[in-house]
Structures are given as C-alpha cells and as structure tokens.
Image 1 (tube, rainbow, N blue to C red):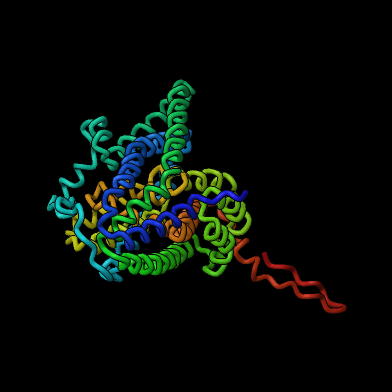
Image 2 (image 1 turned 180 degrees about the vertical axis):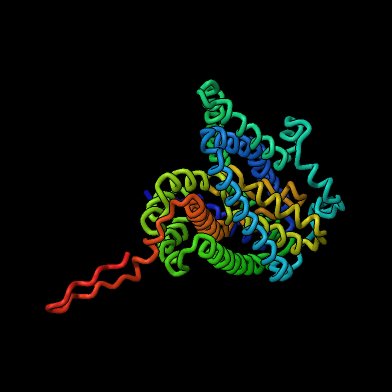
Length: 423
C-alpha cells in the first residue's frame, strides 16, 4: 500500500481543521490545546537542534578549511542570505500581503515588536551572559552565537584528533534530536488541524485569501532574488549571463520538483563542475557546507512571513523591529537540519522569538510544500553561485565551459580544411 507523505497529511489536516472551524465555530476552541501541545513539543527540541547542528557543522571542518577559503565562503553565504532576507522584507512591505484581511489580535497584547529598544541594546542582546539561561529562555540568537564560537574552537582544538570524542558526542546527540523532531512531526497533521480549526473559528474562511497572495508574492520575490544574484555573479566572475543561466537550469528544475536540497546536491555538484566550471575541490567544500549552513530561501520566507503576520494582526513595527526580523531570519537559517516539515520547524523558532501569535503558524503549514519549492530553488542557487564566486576568486573557474553551448561545428566543404571548434 502506498504510504501517504507527511506533506499530504498536513495539507489534509489543515483542510479538515478549516472545515471543522467553519462548521462548529467557537465551540471548537477547546481542541486548540492539542495544537498548542504540538507546538510546545517542537519548541522543546528545536533550540537543542540548532545548537548541535551549528557546532557539528563548524566543528567537523578542518582548520585549513576555516582559513581564507572558509572565511570567503562564509562571507558569501552571509551576503546572499542577507540579500534574500531583505528581498523578502521588501516584498512584504511593498505588496502588503497581510492587508487583504484583518485577523483577531489573539495573544498579541505583549508583542515584542512594539518594543522601542535602541540599536546598541538590540546588538548587545545578541550576546549571551549565560548560555544555560539562553537555552532555558529559548533565545535562538544567543544560542547561535555561542554555537558558532564553540564550533570554531572545537575545529581548531581538534586538529590532532584530541577532541574526537566531543565531536562524536555532539553528532550522536544531533542524530537523536533529529529523531525526536521527526517523531513529534508525526503528530503534525493532528496538531495543525486543531490549530487551524481555532483560527478559522475565530476569523472565518477569509484566512485563505492572504495565503494565496503570499504564495504569489513569494514566487515573485524568489524570481527577483535570482535575477539580482545572477547579475552580480555574472559581473564579478566575468562569465556570460546566458551561460550562467543555462548551467543552472537543470539544478533549478531538480530543486523545484523535489523540494529537497539533499536530493539536489549530487546534481548540483556534477553541474557545478561540468557546466559552470567550478573546480572539484571548491565544489566539494562549498556545496555540502552550503546545504548545512546556507538557506537563502528560508531567510526570504521567514522575513516575508513575519512582515505578513504583523500586517494580519495590525501590529505597528518600528525600523528597529524590521532589523530584528532580518537578522533573526538570517541567524535562524544557520545549522538548518533537513527534517520533514523544515519550514514549519523554522517558524516555531522565529515566530515566538518575535512575540507573534504561535497559532498563526497553522496558516502556513498547509502551503508549506508549495513554499518549499521556492525555498529550495533559492537555497541551491545561492550555494552554487557562491561556489562560482569563490572559484573565480581563487583562480579555479574554467570559463570555457560557458561558451560550449554556443559552439556550432560546421561541416567541412570539399577541398577545404575543417574549421577548429572554439572552446
């Protein structure tokens, strides 16, 4: 018997919950406790998941990989992710997808986004005074900062294998944490159904209109991000734009249809070398590392969702709050682990951190698969263009491959010499 995918189950759960909410109205409010339990279980594991994933990703690298090549790769990851988050933020502000309807305020009486914290205090709050306090409070930004520093120290100290046991322990805990999240995600269809029933009971069927608007705007934002990124890489790496697009076409198609960066990785590595001219050492370092640390599509998604939620609930945001959205969207992508419903898990990180209603996560759960198509495309293209940029900077980019598609071999006429093929 064919097994029904988790995505399909979540979609069915969302529709069943919406139907229940419309039929029974406010009388279904009591079942929302099931959805809240589901969200709490994810929150219980997700901070540990982020902590371990970042430490493992950085701690597993050799010190020489963390040299100038690692720094250059990391800076490119940061720049492309920041660009994606800004595109998502800008798209939300420009097109205002959340103004199509107005939802009830629910639990927004103490929304963090209304705080008037100054810039210096906001930056200072990124750094923990006590990592256990940060873990206990679920302060994701502080946890990530600690994990980055710990991972770098572990990589340097473990150069001679002295701390292999520590790295092995971190990997083992990560594997168990992922299994825990996957176990919790099995309850996602029921949890999402309960949350969706409550949201629809409070607001009616009008909640579906902004979701369709969101998908359209997110698709346009993804295309805009790719166009800007292609132009930047074409200029910096000195490669033809048409050749760049041609070399990335198959990668984009695989990413869009599978919605999985892990599945797209083998195609990514092969095409990066044969169609985009990236040397094998560069592609072997940058692309796997990008799958673990670089999530352009997710950063764009998170920032757009947050802006949309503030509009749906009529929350006024300050410029500092917008900066918080961008930075948290970028930092939340670090150490993203490939688990079922990854977008849903990411929302449980950023939504409560910004003080937005947790019940709003149910709105986006049912369209997560469609959002995942755009997220994955932006992710893999960001990784691959980073590999191109790094290879160009290191003098390890074979630009001849970009012209092969334009080569036309003419048949020699009788008595004339066969013309050489230009490479």
